[in-house]
Image (cartoon, rainbow, N blue to C red):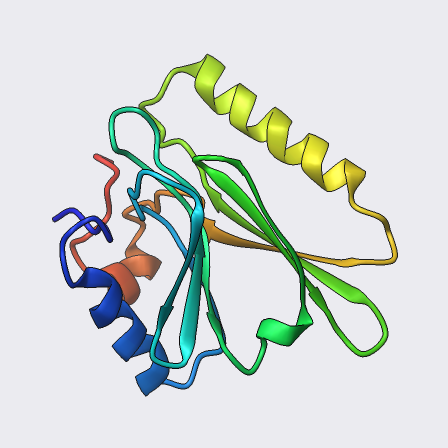
Length: 158
């Protein structure tokens, strides 16, 4: 099953769920929209970056309107990484939304992604809190102790 916000009505459904659980900040992946921008839906604003030329990826944030006045910056690095800087009481919080390449991607693509992420992290002032959110595309094994959590749904063969 593919989860994407490209399908008509998906953004509204996502916002309904976010608001149902009273979440004020959500990192979104697989947005798959062509442009960068913002969209208002109910009490939530979606800040988003564009997808790649094959209409894949695209990251952004869903932010409750009560938090919008604290946003200092929203920056799209590429179709896999976006940054949201929020002003807190004593310091800024930098949220990095990432969508890491999967295991089957080329070594070069994975190395480029992690090098870019390391570079971004190294340029963030130490006085700011850094929080990495998103889809790291981690795979979990089939060890016996994991069975109660993952049941039969591990992506690994062994």
